[in-house]
Length: 99
Image 1 (cartoon, rainbow, N blue to C red):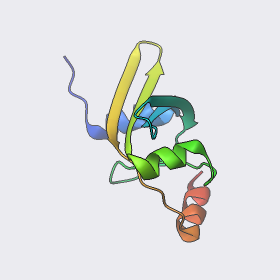
Image 2: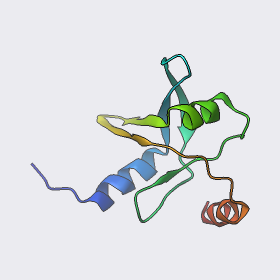
Image 3: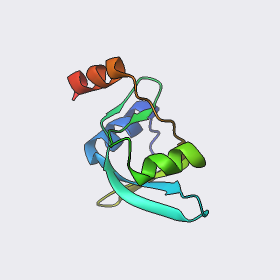
Image 4: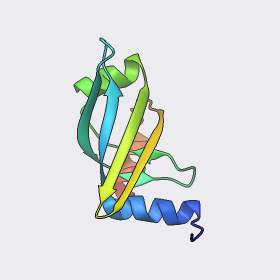
């Protein structure tokens, strides 16, 4: 089996671009919705843009656990972790410039 580097994986995920972003709501229910990845940084953090008043933000601020499910052709990747809300206008501008 071929060895793949983290950079290979990141390149694949960037090519796929959209994932199913799963959160845990206030009742403990898993909720998934499609989200476009805005950027994956050098520390392998995934960045997304969404309205601050969306339900997914409530889920992130509550439980914080997320899963990102990527699928394309015969490739699938599941990434589990925690999410945080960032409302820094400078970071938004930086990410806008990368897109």
